[in-house]
Length: 81
Image (cartoon, rainbow, N blue to C red):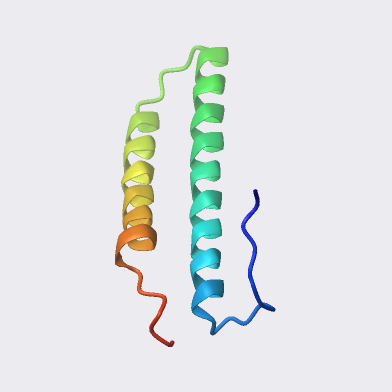
């Protein structure tokens, strides 16, 4: 079931901000997965030795983890902006 708002969109609404942040996080996860799988595919296709691939994946994953911790644990949406 897709997420939806119970009222018209209002950027100041806590429900809207929470949904916006969760959708933004889902987009971040999708871009991470698509980029890393694309890099791995082309590395195998060209039999390349790309030492930066591992560092890119690790650093991006750490950024993704920080983003996830913020969205799911630290953000307080009940407080007004």
